[in-house]
Length: 378
Image (cartoon, rainbow, N blue to C red; front, top):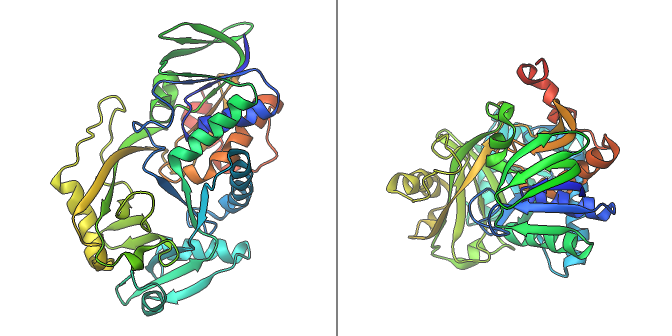
């Protein structure tokens, strides 16, 4: 019997496992694939981290704590996980990307600069932006390592006494008395509490999540660059970029060859996580080329690598982090909508607090299930 079982040991689950183990709990993490696998949402070398948060200003205090916790995890792991490059939030005046980022900077007194397209090009010549574009530069932005972040959290949890089962599929989470029962393809486990961090598979375990945590196919590509010096981490900030034909995000060259770019809600493909098409076709590449040719012509080389991953979208694209209404012994984290990974350590801390204390000292009012009346009024 366990004090807590964590279902799904990806970005959020590995962090929850670690923070529960830090609280001294007897905790088990169950992962259906190998740790740091490429089937879900926590792979592809790195993920953007940024303080200037265009999605909503209330994320910023959580980000400040996430930075602290990533640095603490680096100490435990003995390796660098967070790399600072600066970040650019780019779009026309009036766009959510530019105005939302600027609002967060001003409300939270974040160091920042407002740059014209010409300013960006002079300072960071890997960028060649359209002239009507403006940008918010925030010097603390950068990226965190994706697979390495998962393995670092999991290794630190195991070092603190946590158990970890890989290659084991959870088939049900049942609110029984006096414990919660977790059934897998290998056995049955009883726990005082269960944390569900199953990503795109969460709704298969908690059926009422189906309309609230919707998997979507996503693609990342790495293209060859004509001048590597322009795309070094020291010369090329990470970015969010809003153009008339979509919103894109990207990275300097790091870890594997090539300039890395993705498009939010790539082709709008709602999928099943078990049958998602992982092949890369010409239309996937065309979507990226449009932005590369408009803004990064020095990166318009052949595709060197490409991969699929998944977003799990909530209706409002804000996170779902809460106790499950049908039984508060079950705590959930889902619907991270393509912008969650940077928050992994602080979400792990929140999940441990909800599990052990029944509440959290962090403000998660934006993430509570009460905003979805269909579920909470049942």
